Image 1 (cartoon, rainbow over the protein chains, first blue to last red):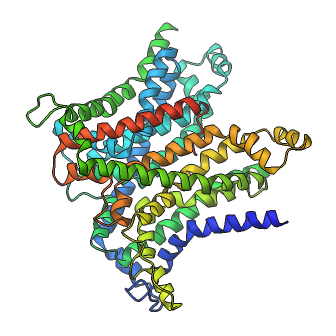
Image 2 (tube, helix red, strand yellow; image 1 turned 180 degrees about the horizontal axis):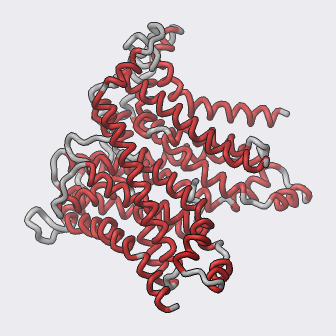
Image 3 (cartoon, each protein chain N blue to C red; image 1 turned 180 degrees about the vertical axis):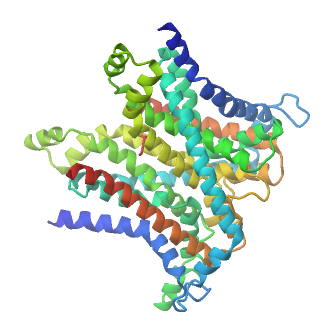
Length: 258
Length: 275
């Protein structure tokens, strides 16, 4: 009995540690008073200001645009690459997967500066394009690593049966293999999307002057002092993430009940 | 049949070219810049620069803080993973979700949250003065940096450990109990040894971002505390000495490679796949 109480207390303490800062941001986003230590009454003013803040809204748009483009492109390249990697010799596979691991295991700051040096040396114009190239680069490994396990557990006979029954290899792939891989492809896509949205460090080194994603915009704003609009933004992001995760979490449960 | 096999190999071409151009060549450029001076001739000065007082201090400071933060993460995460593992209930996945949800919040916003809490005129001191208690001075100290590291990277420790603990066969634990093992014995002789892969990959996933961070130290540590990440970042964005910045990055990569080898030895099951 004491043991379960202790366990519960521990869980609650960790939850407080995890959520107190986020709850603080949410409370402050409704605070009329600009000083953080005092409660000056309820207001939605900061939300109104946030939506009128063109710099922040532009950065939000850039973030979503890059995340969508980067996750779509990296899912395409990554899925095709995973299929190709499975057909490599053992040695070739080790080499390619070793290289694939580099962006995941290396420090983000090193990945960031290495891409910055590349873009400078080859005369790329820094801007949305360079950010997108960088994001695709660090997103592809996540796609490959979530598609690979599905490929390994694939039953090769269904595909062969399709060929025996007269399907062309392409038709067989589209009708048999890709649907089998879909859960892996979907989770790779989601992971790429969230990685891209959350990234700051690599974007920091590969963005051009005047082009910002949400993370880099917040970084420059914060150096000047945090504005309450940022609290409003955090609240919106947190609620969005919470709702999305709850929806994703709910989906399979419904399926099971059937 | 042979044609389709060749075709399948061709499928990988876009990715092979991509990884050559955006992974390997950029890394090569870091080494090129790190091993040359501004005129382009070979030198080891940029790497040897790590022994200069300011750089060595930044590296040791980063190592020190990252080690402490990793240790705290491990101490907090292990009991949490054990408790989560015993909660084999229907809300299972939802419970896990609650503990990793903050990870999906923007990294900068999470760090800003702590800045807001800890500042001199921040929320915590506001509450303390309301209760007529003396204020705390944590912001712009190493303590604030460690706190920021632990807060940001704790989920990276919890998930791999939880993954490897949840794979442990319950019947082993039951057998130990039947044979008279007590709680601590089960923990030390069953859970700990069997969750080593998770622990190692958790350590890697916390230690490397903590060691190389420049954001947490800048936002929570003020301008006085420089970690190796801050030094490298400034060489690229402020002073534009790319050669020195690259040289220091090569030194940093040695630690990363050491860490990679360590995790490759222990983590054969890929516990670091945290989604």
